[in-house]
Length: 77
Image (cartoon, rainbow, N blue to C red; front, side, top):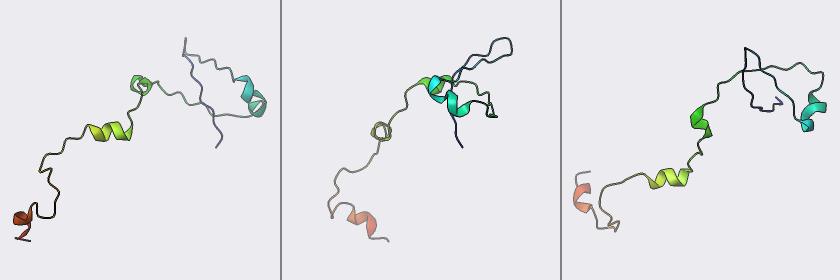
């Protein structure tokens, strides 16, 4: 599926879209499907990276990761 995304404003029930010059020749005289999708304000906010999201995770517990740490807890298994 070939697609281009354009922004437009609905005014009096009409949407006027001008195809950018770079795409005009390839789209000229072709039947197209138009989908009206409301712009989501949250989409305008920059997305956070996975790393910054992971940095927000709080983990509680021992910071001692040595082999002997926690052996008492594992004896029952």
